[in-house]
Image (tube, rainbow, N blue to C red; front, side):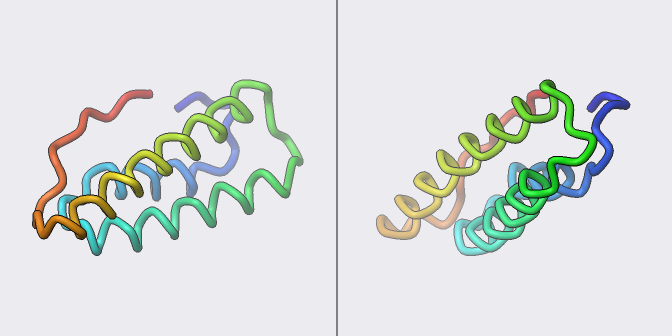
Length: 87
């Protein structure tokens, strides 16, 4: 999280999703994080190349988490495996 990132809301929502263990709750947190990322992408004001890369990377991570959560819900597994938070 560098100083050049002017709107950390999307990042905070991504971190909340990464920490969520319940697949149903995870899907809700992914939706909130994705919405905040897309809002930030549309703003474009003050974005650095580093932030643009972080936004794209976050969307990719959220997509992978969504697939995992959906798979866990289909198989009836109640918990998503613990993940490391990387920046």
